Length: 260
Image 1 (cartoon, rainbow, N blue to C red):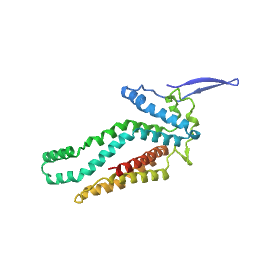
Image 2 (spheres, rainbow, N blue to C red):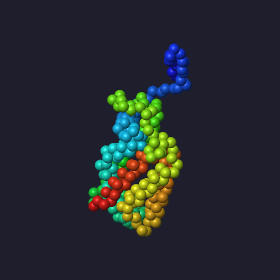
Image 3 (tube, rainbow, N blue to C red):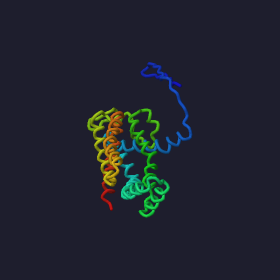
Image 4 (spheres, rainbow, N blue to C red):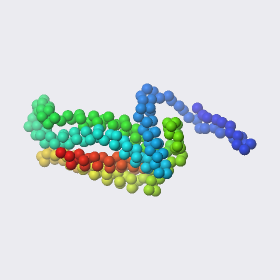
């Protein structure tokens, strides 16, 4: 398709024509993704920007991240608590694997007994995280879209006090719609490093199991580096979202670590 129009301005007529573009109707799952996840999150984001000082993109990202993290607080708390319980019984499970290393059926039987005795459900730490994925993915794509004027059509009609073209993309002098190769990646990697170490504080590694200990050390080093590369390759606004979310997660992890 293309769009063509003749505009008359001060007794002069101007003919304009857009570049050709294609349109493909969304399928069933595409409509669910757009209307159930992406569009509500995007409009919540735009509303946060509209109430922020100076229509600032950065403040909108921070407000949106905090709001979503608080909404998912109880779900995250259950997952972190479950991980702490699993870490507590890990030495017992390691002994079972060592004792019955040639009998997988016995390992499964004894592991199930430990889970029942300690009242631990291994799925309780996974399910809450899985339920968050659609929302978190929607937030990621919303922040990544930044100030694309094509997105104006997705804004609900009742949010009338915002135009994407009027949004301020600068936060402390950093353009959040552009890539930031140093400061934001370093910030995100540092926070990720702290969070991983806090989460590993609950893990009781068997001293005999050098492989497990080495894997934990490698994860604590490699994961922040991967996140830094990831943050450097995307608009800085995504990095701000990741940094604020990780900082909130650090606070939540501290609460879980100190709890009995």
